[in-house]
Amino acid sequence: MEATLNINNDNVTGINSEVTDLSQEKDKVLHKKRETVGNPFVENPRMTCRDVFVYYGDKMAINNAGIDVACNEVIAMIGPSGCGKSTFLRCLNRMNDTVESCRVTGDIRIDGMDIYAKNVDVVPLRARVGMVFQKPNPFPKSIYDNVAYGPKIHGLAQNKAEIDEIVETSLKKAGLWEEAKDRLNQPGTGLSGGQQQRLCIARAIAVSPEVILMDEPCSALDPIATAKIEGLIAELRQHYSIVIVTHSMQQAARVSQRTAYFHLGDIIEVGPTERIFTNPRHQLTEDYITGRFG
Image 1: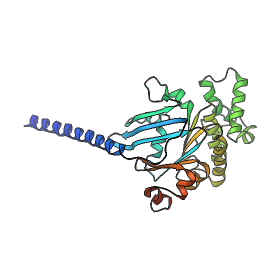
Image 2: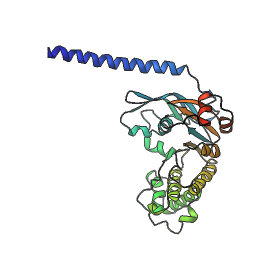
Image 3: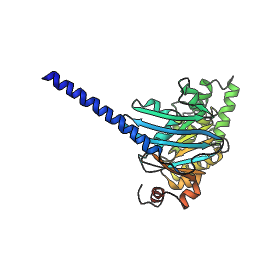
Image 4: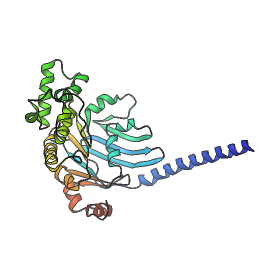
């Protein structure tokens, strides 16, 4: 009797697994028929994303996403909490690889290179696609060593003079040189919150990335520090492509050229930022922009 029960339980488990697989395939078919409103694609993109699905275990978090990141633009990703925008952002430099239950499918490329190809080393990839997190996370090192760390491990400098130049240039680009030049040997953790975030930006650009990802970089900062970071983003756009996730629609309107609206794992609408905020084409986008939900 016990053996019979075990067999039945195994059968039930197998059936449940098949049902889950069929459900996922059904979701894929349904969402492939759904097109994002607007134009998510651009000419001569820096990064391309096609047919991207993300799962945490059996739960689908991103549904058939397709979008481009243009050269020298800031694209903002907005939407309610839990809609998938940060999950999608982390796909762009394979940060989701560190999450055991996470599975990413689809095609994501930078300058034509498939970043999920088996022969791709994530260390140089994350130098090309840098990341600035929600909370400043300077290394427990000096200001100088925070910025010099990346160039050293990637072999971008041959001697100390070259490292000195990279550190100074990066801190200047991050708008921190004048505040930090006389205290380079002091701990980076001794800086204010806004200064720490600019130090993290300096650390990211020190390895000459092509794309900078920013996951709510100002959410832990006061308005003055936020204004400095936003001004810095506008300057950095001249040299890099920037993808920013933000809960602040005002911030998205101030810093970005294009905006993508996410809802329950779908990219609902993509377009020029001014149009998205003044004349959204999808009802869900309008409902979010006007505060009906969020």
